[in-house]
Amino acid sequence: MNVILQSHDQRFAVVHSEPWMAEALAEIQEASFPDLAPQEKIRPEHYRSHIDIFPEGQHAVIEVSTGRVVACSTDLRTRVDFAHFAHKYLEAVGGNYLTTHDPKGDWLYGADIGVHPDYRGLGLSTLLYNARHRLVRDLGLKGHVAGAMPKGYGPLKEQMPIEVYVHKVVRGELTDPVLSVQLKRGYAVWGIIPDYLEDASCANYGVFIVWRNPEVAW
Image (tube, rainbow, N blue to C red; front, top):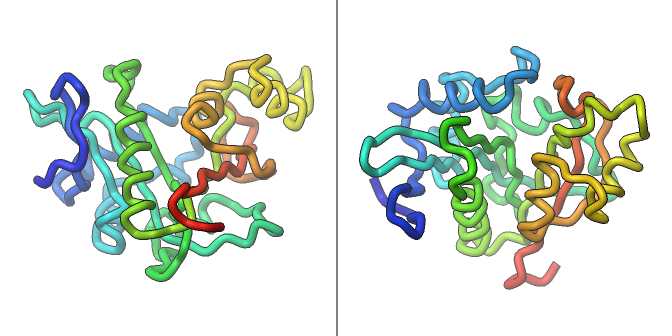
């Protein structure tokens, strides 16, 4: 396996996902998104399709000493109409098979990222985001976009509208387990997507976020 990035302590390495990892990748997905509707979860056959369609956009984190797959991310190339950014997750990712991948797309779309609960707090999502941003630079793309899941909103949905919640997260008045982390990595909120997917933790909302490649004019 070709190592793309390594953690500072050399304990973990980012590599491109391979077909033999499919079952482990699906286990990470299940553990990372327990509230996601079953029809929206990425299964082993989906991961194999991702690797076949766009291998460069599929990243996995390996624990070097054990060879265990402990985190992963999925991306595809796309074109973005920022005036009409609202969309449904499953439509954007071709029913999780990534058949919507556009080899000439000028943006990288983040379909999925997850860290196994046993390995959280070790900087593995940072490794994956760094790998994604490196890919954006290597391909000369305009940047990276995604439908972030505001997973802290579900318990608060009766207390405030989603717009107020996101505003408070952006201002640092509230901390969201997903969106706050992405904002710290240089992403900006472009807009809110209702009915993005089916997940009670985020009340089915997505937040369209954008990271611009500083090496490319937008």
